[in-house]
Length: 166
View 1 (cartoon, helix red, strand yellow):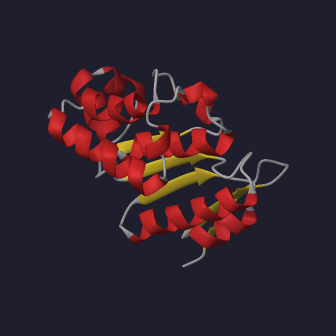
View 2 (cartoon, helix red, strand yellow):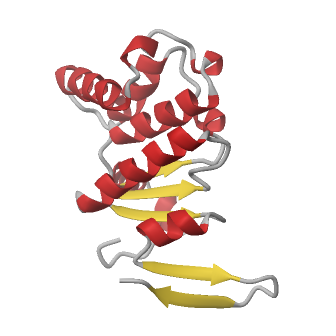
View 3 (spheres, helix red, strand yellow):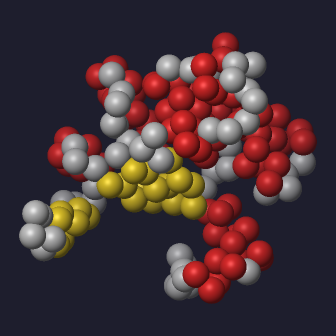
């Protein structure tokens, strides 16, 4: 990022690791593996707390993310009690509160109903339009066509083909 190499040795350094994690957000294919706090609200506050942000800014970021993603009514719920789509939105909101410049997503549309998939594609398009970098793995050609500027396709023989779309 910004001309710096990323490797295991650098990631072991606290200062570099903190710098990196403030700029790169991760959304896993199964959002349940990244949700571990007692409530949705605590989940959204965790990242900004680790960044050392002032409490007033943390509360503002959490409130704005919950409103944007329609999670306000779920603020006190434990993540394990949420539906799949609610878990995905909570995972996204937890990254959103950190406002990273790079978003990495593993199979972002996996296990979502059609309405939630459509919502997520629109959300990712808005992130991209806002200047965020999106890096994602997917089997969904529609998502790749809608969002990717550059695609790397890997075939069954593990051959990689680079396709520039825009």
